[in-house]
Image 1 (tube, rainbow, N blue to C red):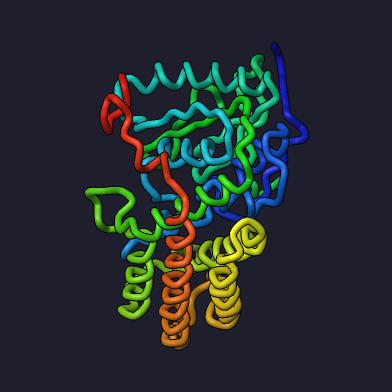
Image 2: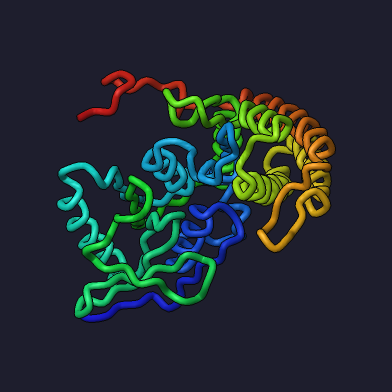
Length: 332
């Protein structure tokens, strides 16, 4: 087949790059119906909060093994998925690269785009066999990037990653909401997403890393702003999700109020982050006020997570408590 392009697939950068890409692929293919904030929360992505100790910008995507996290996201939405990735330095990379080119083309032929690490995450929404190229959307522009088949997976990071999707199953809405609460609890309690490396923290500990870096003043300027921008968006997503979730679990009303207060507090970021000729930066003189806000936000999230635990505790969690007959390891 010569050229195939999924013209109805549109990527808009509004959330985490993976969330934006997942939403674009699934909505265009009719696999998800609803607002992006709901997909972000139900997939667990909204609750991911990761921070490098020097606030490097890659913190936002350094949330663990992508294959595991992204498969969990699709599973939580009831969507079949295949994901692959690794390091481009591995001697077998070229073989995986050639195979990935074929299964991504097959996915596009079936009307489903593929999520691809550019970096950050974007969507492959078309190909041209005559020119041996993919068309890639990054969400920052409506124009497609060109990616040669031979350059698939090669970028300035040592990693490559791609994900495709298939059919979906219907999961009761209440069950999806309950699982989202449990994903939130997992993310809050998990201290380090990429063990044994402890340069990056997640959840509750991510707040400590962010606060410490700001107070010490030794941090990446761009990364600090990017982390705070992403934090602000994801907390609003959670707030909006809880406003819907309360119809299933009325006790979540208090948790929703916690996030409403938190979102209101993040309004200060408009004052604490300034713009100049060299880009946006945290105003050093406003760091004490910013830190005070973050400490209060951490307390709000702690209170909300306690409510999630109370709600979750009233229902069996077979996914986390049932040990399969082959033990804790996946059958080979």
